[in-house]
Length: 271
Image (cartoon, rainbow, N blue to C red; front, top):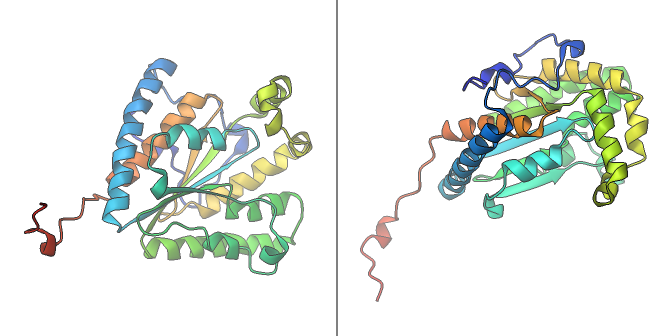
């Protein structure tokens, strides 16, 4: 795989064809898993340093959005990519079925409360995109409502960007056969039983509808200020490598610096 990461970035307004998506794609990475693991170790070390700079400088914010079908590895990505970072400056927010209070507000209300503060990285494990995915596939709201939400999401993310939040969005793609293998593994492995839900096999019946919903959502909401990245994720090592590279690149582009010692403290002597 070339050093460039733009090949995974979805252009604004792209017309995507789910039938062409390949979860096995490793984009020409010749080193194999062992080489990828070595590179990931270096990237994680770099990420740890950059996250500390972000937190210390207290000027920028980073929002990482992870979306995927069940068992594609959102939790594993968070665990492996962010291994070793200071938890004081990194937070994970998950979005389940909306509560009664949340349903009484607009669909972005609960999301806005979870966006990163200055100096913080926040990871959305699922996100506001559920409202143009699940809501669409299961007809939870009429079509004019979820159609309108693409524009509302773009406006919301633009507002965050203009206020100093960098936004990276990752769609972790596995194919249907790989999902079947992983779900069966959860049934066979006692240490993974807790991960299995009866909703998982039910949701598989809507695979085609979800792929169409993802294709439209990714194309209509990948913007210059909040791009989507398509990440082939059948191979976990490749998934983690791509995500970590993109995040490190974004943090490096902030050119963060440690704040200087305040003038009042420069003459201080510790006795």
